[in-house]
Image 1 (cartoon, helix red, strand yellow):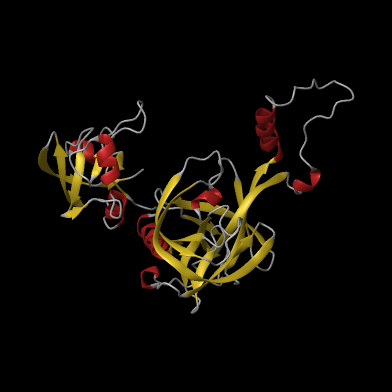
Image 2 (image 1 turned 90 degrees about the vertical axis):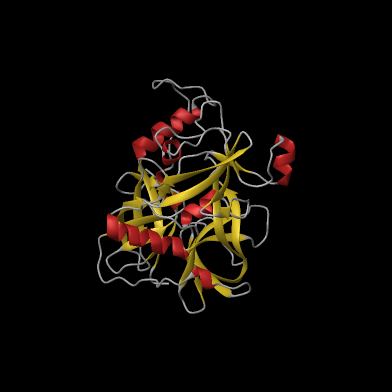
Length: 340
């Protein structure tokens, strides 16, 4: 628990006031500065600290290196032009620097200027079993620091589509740990630990309207991100460069496709590219309406999509792709580059 921290998201008063005014100007009539007997828009003084910063959100995190490296969710620190402050268990407030964000998984890594800090040891999520006891720790609702809740592993390798807020685009999240340990807004970024005290996940998402259905990102993603950061100074993730829809028996019937598995390369909107120009897929000759059937000999299915294949590969790896074009089965090699 001493290694679990709260993360406060703040913006300068003037910046928040400008943004709020822009959002409200279509709802409330603009009031001239010299108008009398009108209440003008203002931010309550209790929300503004002595440095003129406004607290606009927050979450949790946990220290994984004695020199102040902290792990949290990417969506906790997604606010542009914001400043981030880490609140330690003893009440100290330290400014945080964003070191890197994982472009695929909801993981981010911060750094504070401190030494000899307590840390959370990292476990192995691949060894989790259904029914195993786990504990979620975090800053529940942004109000109750170091809240601890006990539960079990309710499911493994879950896939969901999640949104950080109603205005954010949905993000597909795969391979998640499902737990009935209570996870609330503000818990995001805190650790899910096993009975040995080893972090096995990062608390990430809940299902609104449901009871005791929460999700955590496997800690193995974090371990890999930390290794990349220490080796390359950033997180390196491989890029294929296609937009696709997974095919199953239902979509095969609806779209009159020749196969009931694979990934149909297709645009999401008329303004998109099905194959990103200059990407590895483009250089390997993949085209719109191709159906990717296999990668390295493994069938692409809803339970084994392209994203899962890429999770086990690295930048610079070459993979063998079998695909269908106009009823003809073809093969090509794709050398993965780094996702920017």
